[in-house]
Image (cartoon, rainbow, N blue to C red; front, side):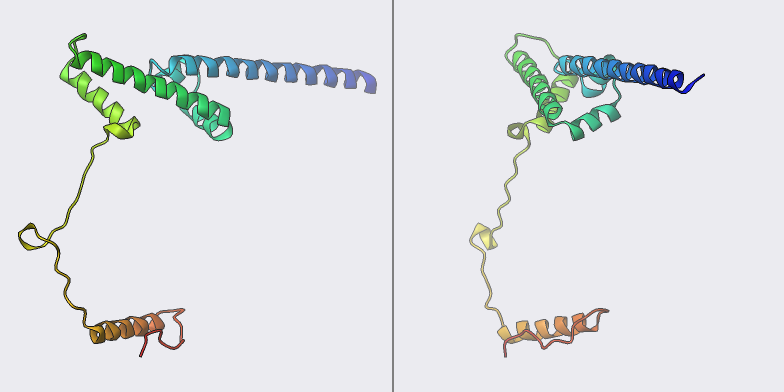
Length: 168
């Protein structure tokens, strides 16, 4: 085979490889679209499996494409909207739902919507529910404690030999 024939074969094979790559890219685009279409009605793993994508591929897409990340977030938001609507229908008596389904829906909402997360409030009070009583601080004890801490810090590896920072 002469040099020109080899170049033609390489050129043809190069185009064949590029065409196969383009076809794979096209299949990936179709699979991504299918995943995003299925996501509002299925979980992430089920939608990825039905679309022929691995979760690793989905994670890579999220990292590399802001557009995909936004589309996936929108689809996930639609899914949570569907769960919220289903739970409301059960609460209003329009639909039947088991305790397991209601609890699962509640967990999905808590995981995805701030307004459904448990709210806690901590309040610290003094004796009898009154205000906290702040004791007078003995400034000499504070100065002594700071000196001891500084001495320990200087004794540590890499400690400093600078003058103490305490006010005299």
